[in-house]
Length: 124
Image 1: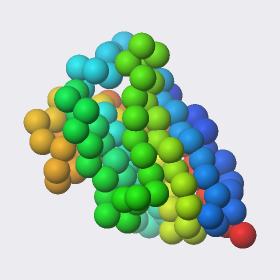
Image 2: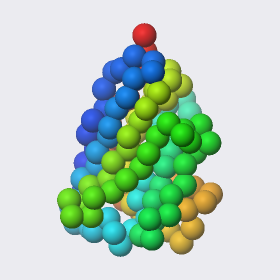
Image 3: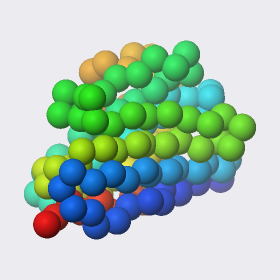
Image 4: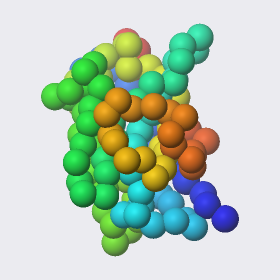
């Protein structure tokens, strides 16, 4: 049984930083394209950052230069380092994995496995 478990969400002030983690069981991250998605209330789920099994990455324009995706294959864990956080980054953040051929454009429906999410709130 595949499980993805996110952690690290919190409430932070604008300009702050957070690191999200996602640990997988029942699958090996290195065999999949994996990534982070987010969904704010009343909005569609959007891709934030994805990385494939050749370490090619794709970031949403809104987070380029501020967020960094990485993975530790030995720990089967995916990370999202988020710096210079803005109020518009407030959302539930989800980890996902899928056998995706192309990392752009990012389509949530292409990802088969999902975690339950971790809340990030950026507020003064």
